[in-house]
Amino acid sequence: MNESVKIEHLKLVRLLQLAYSAEKAAAFAYIGHAGSVKNPDEKVAIKQIEMDEWQHRETVLSIMKQHAITPSRYYEIKYHIIGRVISCSCYVIGWFMPYYFAGRLESGNVCEYFIMMRYFNEIGITAHDELLYEMGMKEKEHEVYFQKGLQNNRLLPLFERIFGWGNKSSFNDVDLATKSPVEESKGYCNHRK
Ligand SMILES: [Fe+2]
Ligand SMILES: [Fe+2]
Image (cartoon, rainbow, N blue to C red; front, side, top):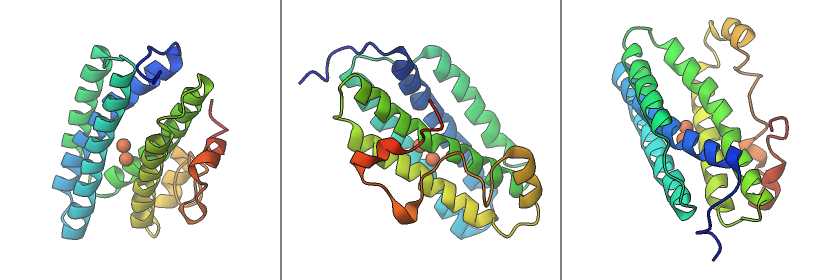
């Protein structure tokens, strides 16, 4: 196996380190989010999303370890703070905004994993394709969860116009109803480098 070999792809190394730390920020944020919503079904759903993010962090770390990549201290501190701040803010900014910005963030995260897959493939490594695909698709499920929760909200059209995400706009081209198989999923996110 050449998977333990150190990889020479700076953008990929940075992206892995970023994803590892950003998953922590997301998980922290969802702790506050789940704590702040009143509806018990929403609490359970958001708690599950939090668990998914911890799982992603584990998975990203396991991939990093295979290539002797260590977490970035800077990202770890930065995203720790960001996650905690968002977590607390959920208790004061009402129901809509945490739902909206979670969905918008998830929308952008989908492509991170497909781009990572492409970077690995560029240097001849396909061993992580399956895991990266699963994570990308999971982020899409998260996005759709928030999108569905918001779809009839009267604030959504305005936020969609301002922040570029909502019912009709997404930051990725993944459609859960017509998923590409792993081999073809490299075609996703070509609008992003
Ligand atoms: Fe995640
Ligand atoms: Fe997510």
